[in-house]
Length: 316
Image (cartoon, rainbow, N blue to C red; front, top):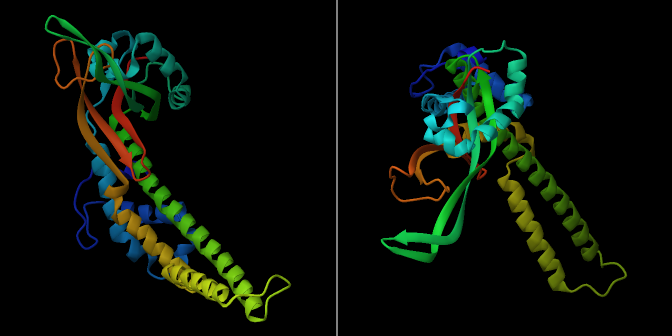
């Protein structure tokens, strides 16, 4: 699977693409395995998913191929790269991180010492608004609003012996993220339908009791029945919006196709620049003492984001 996710581009046009046909078929089956395998009994499922799968695959290929070339991550010489120096803080912290990273530890256990290693460094970046001092000419001003930046939760993804292998692993991971989004939508839809069904049954029971004269409680008012009937009608309307109960598989297939067709709304990259001084305070412009860092943040539709940087690790 990984070997098929190569550096291919092309726009899907009525189901046609520069992607190898073998890859498209495998991705369709991977979509089934990662969402709802029962959909294989739906007639024409592969035809329905073909264009969405191609669209999603080309999107994630473009994302990962557009990541810049790896930076050399050498704890002994961090300041050779302003971005890595900022993200990893110091030689000791960089060494500690590399010695404990689970993906790197597993990778090195199965590869000889000194083997080339390319991986994606993923970091959480946060900003905090504070007040401090600032020098303006000969005057020192107090209570000046500032924004400080910090980096945390460092980890590596898809370590590999070559850059191509690393990028292929990242493409597969990005595609699987879209499948996870689709699966979450399917699960939410199922839970909603089940909840609405239970509420409808309960309201019907209550309404039936009222229409038969009620129990031993206080006499039933006519407006109680009206309210119950209105709530029941609302639930019936919501259930109708979910689609017929006997058409669940077809509806699930359409939902998966919709997520894949909207791949760019579920996973995207943003580029921007940070100008940081030695105290990690943000500035509007870079100077000889303020380092300029180019950032690429990966965002998803769940509101999560992470700063990404391909790295080449120095010999271990």
